[in-house]
Amino acid sequence: MASATTTATAQSLPAYRREPPSQHVLSGSSGSNQVHGQYDIGVGHFSEWSRATKKRFFIDWQASRESEWVIVAGNEGGDLDSMTSALTWAYHLEHSTMNTSNPVKAIALLQTSMDALDLRPENKVALANAKMTSGHSDLLTMDELPEDPETLSRKLKGMVLVDHASPLRKWEKAKILSIFDHHVDKGVAPDANPRVFEKVASCTTLVARQMLDELERLPEEYHMPHELLELILSAIAIDSGGLESGTAADTKTSQRVLDRSRWSNRTLSSAMTSLNSHLKQAKQDLEHLSVRDLLRRDWKGDFVDTPSPRTPTVSLGLASIPYSLSDQISKTGFGELFHWFSIHAAWTAATGVDIDICLNKYKTRPDPASGEKPRKVREIVLTVRDDVRIDERQADSLFRLVYDALESSEELGLKRWERAGELAPRQMVWTHESGAGRKIIRPIVEDAVKGWDM
Image (cartoon, rainbow, N blue to C red; front, side, top):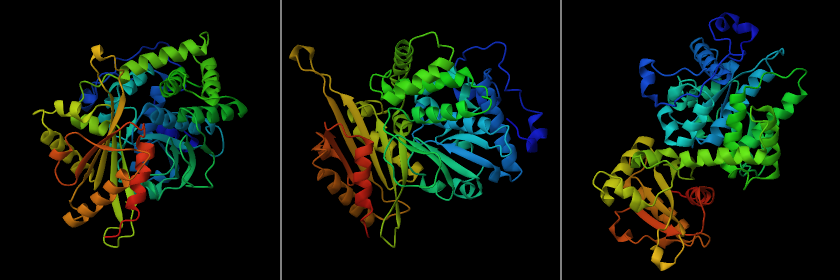
């Protein structure tokens, strides 16, 4: 991993390029033991590389050598696709340039806190299968950054965005070197290279395909750890439903990865179906999560520019939750509507958002005797805070603006929640069956806010 300029540092690091003689699957225990250094150290090549890279990043930061580093970052939702894409490209960047005159130091950054990683149980299972250290201490998360992103972004060699079309506002000073995304191209960093936008089930597909294409063109291939290959297959499997909803690119890339893995003697269909089934079962294990955990489990937010000279930016956050509001209310200590909004207010205060939107989705549970089939229903919970950034009058104006934008959308077809009459000022809940999620609703809200001038 180390270049010639870091030989002294490398001497104290594990010889991670060698495949260890024996390996085991870790228990994936919680991160609580890491404070005391009592976690299970990963034994795989990939874990050793990740831990060594993290150590070297901290050493270089202490020595003011941030300009030597490239950060590979996914979105702040922290799902398996985003995490795997970042880890894969960081590994490739470093290893593909290791024996060149311009070796790259690259590290994957997971834009969530360490204790939030296990809020997605499928992440915990996939990382344990990849023989990573329990408690995730060999991964770099946002709460471990030794410097504020606004400051650090100006010092870095650059950033690579994966599963994300544009950098969050706090990273906007960083030079964007490459982008891989399977959503809408927002025109950011037109000179980035590679710059890949393609509609596939999993962004990991795009990253893995580019990695394999470049790897196979090298004079000599670097070692590809089986743990990473299996992590790649896991991410594609869960995003594509075991390839049932995948594209031709998802299928072809998965086959290329499978051929290099320990599972090369299995058919692609059986391998991906098995992975999807295992991870999907883990993904649905959320009953133990509290309301606050559900709010932060899949939360994304950033600033939106406005023409208002008084408040030129507004903070917007969106959470996606696979439970109805009624079911979430039952998880509160008092089991009451007011307690859910109290927990929600504490969370939004901590994140500093002005506008927060919860996107709930669930299936109805009709009486079996009725003969009715379960329906997929979605909810939108809108709240606007009057807090440090905006006063009560501005908050009222913002609430009405976003309220009108959502209600006027024919695509959504919103209906007021049955208990909407119990809500406080600047709170609203709607139901709909349009199937529209964050990718549809977020632009509606952002476009409305971009015209707000108060």
